[in-house]
Length: 350
Image (cartoon, rainbow, N blue to C red):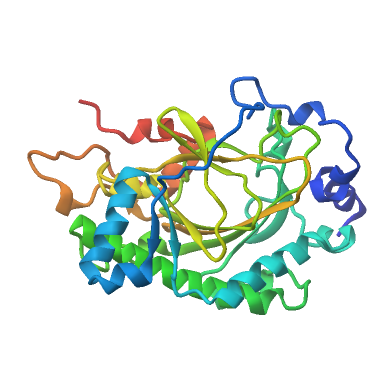
């Protein structure tokens, strides 16, 4: 790493300077209308919790129905007894925290300001230099499908990182296939509808949120809908993930060994609006480091996204036009509207 890039990493990465911050820097203060404020946010006590063992005990159709209803009503749910090894879940969270706890020199070796790199550590977002307000987070992100094509690009430290995260990625990838099959069945689509074209880009993303001097003014992630197909999010034991529902913010309680499953915009389009992509955000706190691990399922850039033809008829006309996923991503980033407005350019006007 060049001295210039090392200096840039140390100046920007929160994990290199935030512990000494007494006040929140002005370029981390969000506008009044979007900052969290000091209001107490309760946990969402109606968020669906799906126990896959119990669901399948009643027959596959029971599992299909539970997942479909959660995707229609909330667009997000928690899943337990999901088949991903519990010790592996714990160890993956541990090794990710070990990564962020490494000396600055080691983290700087992974740091990059090139958004096209297949593995990089950065702070805030891909567009740090042009942001009006920075996010209070560092992020490690890398590709992981097909896994052996990208494994050599992953962090070399901690030494066991590659072995642990490879096992985790394979198991969560299998879980995503099973959940997507249940969604397909619920929608009346063929079990292989979400094939490689719609799931061929899979990303491992670890968010690190250090203690923040003034969490009422900052955000780890702003209100947004996911641009992908579906997300599998693992929380540690510190709360910070919040869902926007019926005009209010509600916390999503961290539950040991549970995944938070979140539908993205592409699932909403493919289902022709039958499923919903929920708005959510990440808030900070003043005392604890918080870590979340995201496994993101994305279409390949050239894949065509459109309402499934099996769902279209005279009484259910298509709500969205066909488009390539890369077109959506370009619009998503250029407009910088990360909520429902991201789909406006793709809606069929009456």
